[in-house]
Image 1 (cartoon, rainbow, N blue to C red):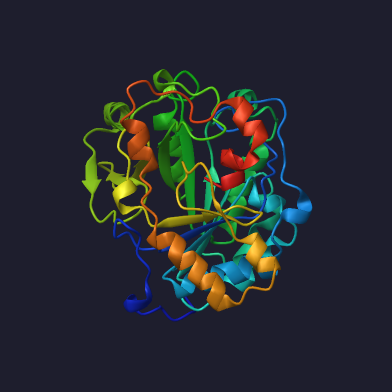
Image 2 (cartoon, rainbow, N blue to C red):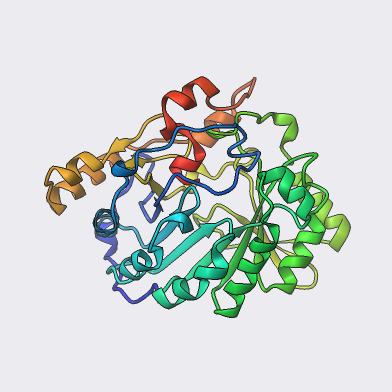
Amino acid sequence: MGGRGKLRPMSEVVHDALARPLRSLRLSVTDRCNLRCAYCMPEESYTWLPRTDLLDFDELTRIARVATDLGVTRLRLTGGEPLLRRELPALVARLVRLTGIKEAALTTNGILLPDLARDLASAGLARLTVSLDTLSPTRFHALTRVDEHARVLGGIEAAREVGLPLKLDTVVVRGVNDDELVPLLEFAATHGAELRFIEYMDVGGATRWSPERVVSRSEILARIGVGFGKIATVGGRGSAPAELFELPGGQRFGVIASVTAPFCATCDRGRLTADGQWLSCLYARRGLDLKAPLRSGASDEELRAILASAWRQRHDRGAEERQALPDREPLVPLTSLRRDPHLEMHTRGG
């Protein structure tokens, strides 16, 4: 599967200005999405990247290959909704064969999974993460503005049937789905999935975010404790965004507390938008254009030098800086988002 290649020697791993290695690469393959989730895409209309600007599979694979020379061992395909990208299993098959890649994963809303789960597994995908914010079809429609809840559940079942290891992500928003923590954990247990609760983040696109709507890590744990009893902390988090916990019966779950307990100090992730903008932080206001050198004939050595230089200069601690603000509001106003779609969460891949 994703671990066929040899690992790079540690001496070749590039580190940033805060001594953080480049280990993980999130590749966005499209900025389009077939949902309009209230915490990510709440507006009525959006400015899309021109299709001619999107990197093709050769270009995406080339960037990933160059990144492995600098230490990347984990890839995650994102969007938008990545399964909207045609022939995506063919890209997966190419990426998992790259030397140095230990795992290639994918995050999806699950709607197209019933049709694609088997092909993704056959291509060598190591793991799937499916967004599941509610167990209620009515609430799902109110949250996403589409009536596809049954398809999402079908996608989860399809992933199980083909043996893909599965995680479920739930963005917890006060007054929207914060009363479903226990039922969602029970659902995850019966479907062999690890559930991760995510604090509602004030990233680009979250134009209706406010501190009052955030359900914090501590509150999430307190509510789950009421339902299940004493919760144990699981060690060995490393650079993973989720802090792991274990229920009395042995079920594990995670909490991604980017708002109240940021993990910037161990962040080892680079991000590439579907049109080739390299982002060193989810909160970054601008990226590094890799499409131009790609399409102007740059060699692998030149691309490697560009990426290495950018990473060595990286000092981002975006979530920590946001946490320190005395009066915290949404990251980017709507007018700025419409001028620059690269600021959107659905463009930079989460």
